[in-house]
Image (cartoon, rainbow, N blue to C red; front, side, top):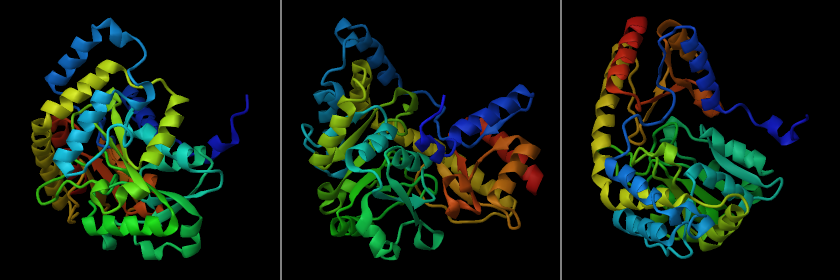
Length: 388
């Protein structure tokens, strides 16, 4: 049976393809170490799991979720408190916060809520591949905005052609950035608001790594910028700070008109978030902030191990201080794909080719720090042996 034409525009999803490659290699008896996917291996804190278990025993929670598409008011209130405490941002839980089944669905629903067929949507290159897929599925036209090392991986608004900016109705941004690890500044965010206001562009600021920053880098929310709520929303997630990727729990915050529009999409798409998961999310936000600092120490140690190994094989660079990824320049004389393939074929170590994130990802690979210490040490030993 013929599939919808729009699906042909969407390339295979990077991480699904990587999983297939890894599974095939394992089936062939290869000891594969994957440093390609950002999925924390350490357990979710016990208090969060216990809250899920306790509330799951209540039959009332077996019915359709409370407040269905919006998310429980208690959960939204806790998000408002979190934003006030961590970022100094005031949010009205009634109309400026929406519960999400992970922030990824928020990207898709944002497009459906804002973008009409053939509208231009700006996105960074390199950038998270799911943005392009959401734009194409929603009938929009993606426009790549380069983010380059010499600009600290921040877009230069002045370089976006005026005619393109006038046609654009939306823009995806993501800092701390996946894949580069770059972090935004308040000066940049204030310029972003000015740019969006000038061209009536709705900003979708995807911020699931907001808490994953290292020494010297402040935690920043887009909503801290002057007038941010007038031009856009911020998506966030409990996946990365609390090791809850599989739980699928996040939020959209900001402009009440956009929140209402996304809520309308959700009420016609799903029936909300399982109540016990929302109760567990409340527990995470209330009690588990120290867990984030604990994980940052773990990621920091792993980060240093990778950087020291790369120095030994002649790769030296000054990495940005966000996310649990490293955006690594490949050795001279090799393309991103050639380096990726050599690593896999010679060492059994999998990394993500920079070109999977866009044309300006050429010359880089992304390495994830979300693997057990023992396996990361083994991967680094293999890499050092192959390239030293």
